[in-house]
Length: 246
Image 1 (cartoon, rainbow, N blue to C red):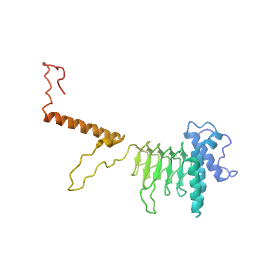
Image 2: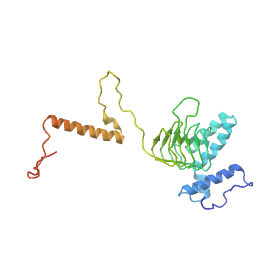
Image 3: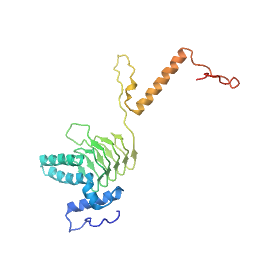
C-alpha cells in the first residue's frame, strides 16, 4: 500500500491503537495526494487529518453518553479545520479529506473504508425526524469537490460522485455520477392563466440559459412568419442575393 514512510507506526502491540489509526491515515494521504512530501508536513499541515483525529475522540465521547462535550469538541474541530463533522457520524478507516474546507458530515452518516472526500462536500439530511436521514458511503467511494449528497441514500462501493453533483437517489457500486437534479422554475395552479416564466432570471444556470435562447429564437421565427418576413430560399440557379435567405 505505497512506500514505507519511515517512523510511521504500523500494526503492532507496541503502538496504541489510536497511533496505529493515525499511521494508516498518513499512509493513505501519501497514497492519494501527490502533493504530500514528507511525514512532518502531513502531520502538521493536513486539516483533513486533524479533523478525523478530533472526530474520533468526539465520537467516543458521543457513544459513551457525553453528548455536550462531544458537540463542543466537534464545534472546536470546525473552528480549527473548517470541517464540520457531527460526533454521531461513523467514519471508517483510511478516510482522506483533501483540503477539507467547507465539508459537512451529518449525524447519521456512515462512511466506509478508503473513502476520499474533497473540499466543499456535503453529506446532509432532508428530514427532521430522529431517524437515519444522512447518506451511507461504501468502501472506496470518491466524492468530488462541492458535491452534495442528501438523504438516507446509499452510494455503492467504489462509486465516484463528480464535482458539483447533487445526489438524492441511491448510486450503484462502481458507477460514476455527474450533474445536477432538476428544479422547478414556474408553477401554474389549475384554473389559473399560465404565465410565461421570465427565463432571464437564469442567474448563471446553463440549462435555463439554453431554454431562454431557444424561446427567443422561436418567438423571432413566429414574428417573421406572421409578418411574411420569412423569405423562400432561392433555387440553385438563382443563387443568393445580398440579404436573402434566413
